[in-house]
Amino acid sequence: MVRRIIILGAAGRDFHNFLTFYRGNPNYEVVAFTCTQIPGIGHRLFPPELAGPRYPKGIPIHLESELERLVKQLKPDEAVLAYSDLSHEQVGHMAARCLALGLDFTMLGPNATMLRPRKPVVSVCAVRTGSGKSTVAQAVAALAHKAGLKPVVIRHPMPYGDLAKSALQRFATLKDLDRAKITMEEREEYEPHITAGNIVYAGVDYARILHKAESEANLIIWDGGNNDLPFIKPDLHIVLADGLRPGAELGAYPGEANVRLADIIAITKADVAKPADIALIRKNVKMLNPRAKVVQLYAEFGVDKPKLVKGKRVLVVEDAPTITHGGLPSAAGLSATLASGGRPVGPRPYAKGTVRRILAQFPHIKVALPALGYTAVELRDLERSINATPADVVVAGSGVAIERLMKLNKPVAHVQLKIREQGEPSFTKLIKDWLSTISK
Image (cartoon, rainbow, N blue to C red; front, side, top):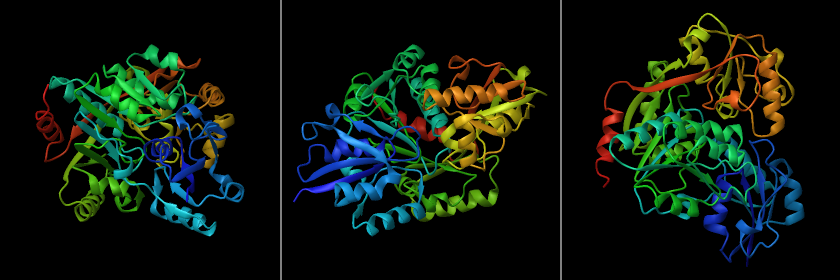
């Protein structure tokens, strides 16, 4: 009998699992996707041109909050969990919810969903969102360039717009980003790579993306999202463990799986983490994966216009996922502000519209604005919130030139950071040694 499937997702892993495992599989019929975490991605259609001939009308995407109604209406047999940045407790609650509805509850593993590449792949993933993946991926790309290689970055998906049009995206210039009309969340990840001279691929159909990327590279760098597993089977798997969130390596899904699979585990923020917390992470990592090499990293923070910041009132704008569902109260923006002698201004009283509602949803955020830009309304409300806050300057820690996207009444300084190493073994040497095995 054909089993009826609901895929529980957040516009990323869910689509990949469908395309790699379910699309052409006669034993299954996917009757719906659900979505959560990201605002504005519900009540869409996974388009028929991507879904394939078995789905001539496409596949509806509903909010996860509608699951009970969908089960009554669509009568599925099985729910498949296909998104990341959850705790093990949250996974257990979701399993209980699905079991109470009479559904089988499953998760697809790497053997069913990882693409097999023809070129060497290094992946950069994490235990939790906000651990510093983007910066480490950029550092790996820089080392690859110095080694005379031709790396191409493939970024974990963020398909928040037209799914058919964004099936395969290639970005080599900032104008490419403008033409694609992508969200600010996507720009945060792509702009730093492009500015550093890296070509970035992203989208929905990662089999096509991988094939295209391999045609112009001799090294693929997988730049992961949230704490998800890579979509492409890596030859070198780097996993970041946040020094400020000890214990997550045992409690995060699928972060723990990343730790167990890692070749190199980098404890980040080692300069500000407590020694006892670093020791706990090392203990947990050794228990989960004794073969992994463990290194310690930290970021050296600054801004590109220090004179604008020193002694001034500063509005900090941070990467949104890091300080929302990532759970951190602040990130690179605040660190750079304090390092540059700025005085942070609390933005909560001045937040407008959707930004105000997000801050109400995440009360742990005290001294920063999340760089919301999933929709035009959010971007407008972020602009209104920034302009209403009585600050002298904005410090943008999200990696995107926000002043290009909105009209601001105050100047913007951008975070600059460099990866530094602490102790032995040397992360740089480990990467250089591995890169030396790749033919140019």
